[in-house]
Length: 408
Ligand SMILES: Cc1ncc(COP(=O)(O)O)c(C=O)c1O
Image (cartoon, rainbow, N blue to C red; front, side, top):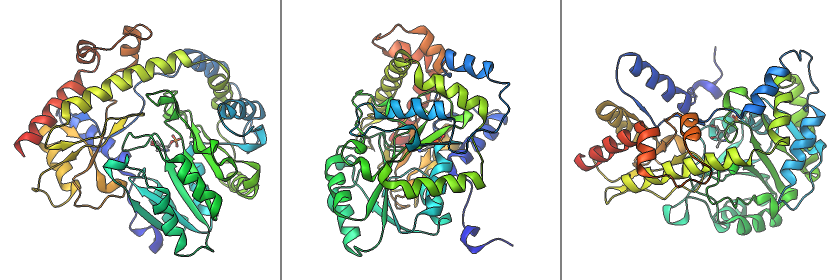
């Protein structure tokens, strides 16, 4: 009774690894949850209070989202961008993931996905019945495609529409895209639009995040939300910022939103106003200080002549490649790692890499972020002793992984 279109789809591997890790833990095994990535920090206090104060809000809200929320998001999004967004450019959704899905459903053309890409882009593109073109990228080039690679795809048929998914800072590589200008030049020449997935942008370690929308705002849909920087993945609030030039897309997403989720939960939308209106720079700076120190620790202690890694530049992840020829697929290798060390990783094949490339995604968030945050001063230099005390599973898991890499 299932459509052929969905028969080969499986639950999202990131959610699956979480469940597998939990099951093993219930059996009494010590599991290092480096497979699932979610913020280790609590939602800022003022935002939680605002949610409590708005628990009584029980009315359906406008399908595009609360006007006041869209206003503050438009203001927040216009900062350091080459476009003055207004509230009508913003669509609030139950997570950016759902809005991306609706975009796939309405878009008619080819989807260009760099490998690596976040796990859900390809399954969503399949559900949207669009053709997918995967662009393999290289470690030496920061794991992002070049303008030339993208142009080559387009030149195969210049008359089609193309939608490129660009995610920086990147899940899974942890890298920040340094090719924004050359990619934006390609968007200006062809029928190419960009979904700029900026869900980790506030957590860029160097603090100078630049959006591709600064170069080609009229061709860029910005996708982001509360899930990562605000530690509120479970609240399910994300948004798109769509320029006037792509009004048809905005209007049609609104139609589909009205026929599917109707509107995001009212109390969450009211609380989100505070998330974007109040100044949370201190909370974000502390998050970056901790995440960059922990990411650097994992990078420095795991890399070797048997483990290749680029230093993470933002977000929660890095992408180790294990040099061994014992395994046929990265998935088989991850099973072996989990069995022998208790460390849960995701295989590179989940992110679009060929199955025989021994790449993995490691999420360095298995620690109590609130405890860590409360224990350090603003701008404190985080040392090994702090990481050992407040992120002990990171230290132990990395140690086990390193030993495994040396013996395999
Ligand atoms: C790259 C990327 N994009 C989008 C999302 C989904 O975010 P949301 O919680 O807004 O649906 C995630 C969450 O894991 C992600 O890693």
